[in-house]
Amino acid sequence: MSVKSVKKTQYSKTERSERRTTWYFLIPSLAGVLLFFILPFIVIIYYSLIDNPIGHRFVFMDNFISILTNPAFQRAVTNTLMFSLIAVPLAVVLSLCLAVLLETNLPLRTQFRTIFITPMMVPVASVVLICQVIFHHNGALNELLKFLGLVPIDWFKSGYSQIVVVVLFLWKNIGYNMILFMAALSNIPVEILEYASIEGAGSFEKFFHIKLRYLSSSILFVTILSLINSFKVFREVYLLTGDYPFDSLYMLQHFMNNTFKNIDYQKLSTAAIIMCIVMIIIIGILFIIDNKVGKDIEE
Amino acid sequence: MIVIDKIKKHFRNFKHFIFVITSLSLLLFLAVLIITPIILTMSNSFMASSEISSNYGKIFSNVTSGSKSYIAETINLKIIPDLIDFGQYITVLIKSPQYLLKFWNSVILVVPIMVFQIVLALAAAYCFARFTGRIREMIFFTYIVLMLMPYQVTLVPNYLVSNWIGILNTRWSIILPGIFAPFSVFILTKYMRRIPSSMSEAAKIDGANELQIFAKVYVPLCKSTIYSVAILVFIDYWNMVEQPLILLSDSEMHPLSVFLSKINSGDVGLAFAVATIYMVPTLLVFLYSEDYLIEGIAYAGGIKG
Image 1: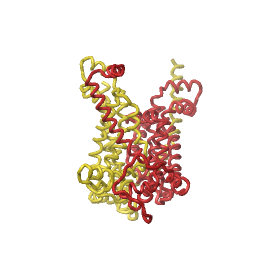
Image 2: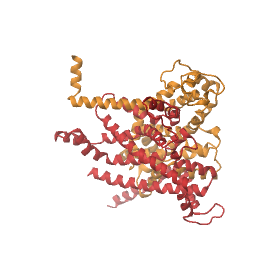
Image 3: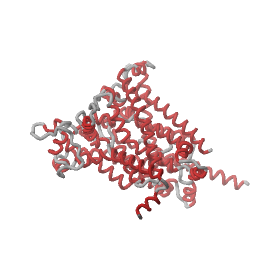
Image 4: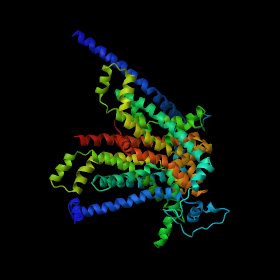
């Protein structure tokens, strides 16, 4: 008895020291994260609550109110949201369709997969030039429109400019989403699909009643990932149209860039915190859904 | 007859045949759309500058400033150049080294970030994966939230710190935050958590300490994941635009990704050559590692560990 209990305490003692040792592995990474992200973030919260870096007077919500009523910020938020509302559903549906198609045993499957992933590997900067040739006022697409007897469109300086960016976003992101969906599709137990076939289910029934149900958590995950990626679309807009784009392409990052140029710490901090709160809400929803849906299937 | 028999064997019935044909043509159409910009960029880089300016003169009107040259009335989007000409490449690679300098700017930013981010992430992931506990879970959760934050949020803290420690407008202001970015920690932790604890128990019986378990058991087992993480990190930073715009006010240090948008209006022909050179590394990496890449993305596919 006594020997056994002594052994047990000894074991947990070594385990405790092992656990302590593994913490050392985290130190370099954690130190950097604290220094470059967490600590300055606390300072940013402080900055967003004071009137200026010299006065240090607490003004609480004043900065938030002035940002939220700032017309430039409002336009940036509206444009970014508009873009996300168009681009994200398209990205999810298109990549899901592609994944489902490539799961069936069509010829040349792997070649198609490779082609659809390739844009992910190509820097946006490399294809911007061709985009300009295609979408320019005198560009190839307008030539085609003229040839078809339609009115040419100024793609960069009209209400249509968001379409160009949506196309570029889809081009870039569909491959990534498609891989996520393909991985999820291959995780569906084969027995269930076989059983459904025996019971006489067609491929459409199998898709809507079984596959979609198993994919539901992936669909939500891809949706939120695309949403997060859609906030990064500034890159494409900047490379296409530079610092001062057409009104409907003025994105959140443009607002931040201009604020960085004036080094207005209060404005910057407040805007960053507002976005951070929005992101945390989105991520929270992601986690809740991930938990619920995941459990649903395991049962 | 044999051919028809083969086709008959391949398709279950007429409906199936129609399905295959329509979906194949759909896929083919999409594939052509997707691959065209890449092919065009590459093929146009082999055009002589006179051909470029005659094809695209209407768009980039300042191409022909000064010199007299023929400008086509319409845009000519040609896949195959009239005459294959390496003039653009000779200019970019030999005559005007400023482009190569920008290329080097990209390399010098991306390679240290990639290497050190993975080294630090391996160690951090080991801590998260070897044992579980409340505090570990909380820190790991913080990493995930940080990973999902857009640049609009993370660049402000980065800027502040760079300003405090006086590295603003140097390459360190991009490299250091890049090294500590939590992306690879996330994927490596997810992978390491699948390593059965019996592996480390066996190593412990053989007398290995934690450092040895890490270096001799965990890291070798993660090899393929390390490749895929390295590729993903490489593409991400090779493509960067936001960070240099804000953290490097000196455009001499800007990577090629930012610089490319600025030469567009000037030397279009050169820009095609530079754009092609810029995508060659990532495409090469892709050709040799498509499976690793797919594996890595699939691992990122669920947020939970």
